[in-house]
Image (tube, rainbow, N blue to C red):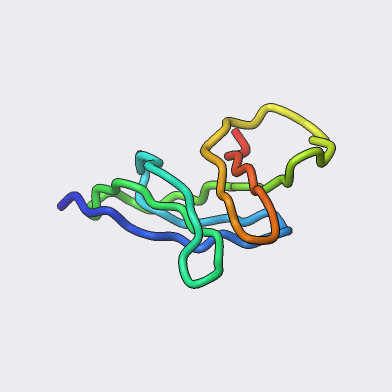
Length: 85
């Protein structure tokens, strides 16, 4: 079954999230004051762990490769979410 699931992102640390294999990342945003990621998932797929990291504007990016996921605008910061590939 396909569903849209919400995953809370850790910040400022890297976050490993378990989600069904092949999950399609849809968007990122703030929910209840916390950075979150929404993904379209096929619930009958086996789980895999995916790693995400958040950087703020003008913060040095230490290494690549990373795939840009989206930007979150909060009251205090602008957060840029990347998936470590």
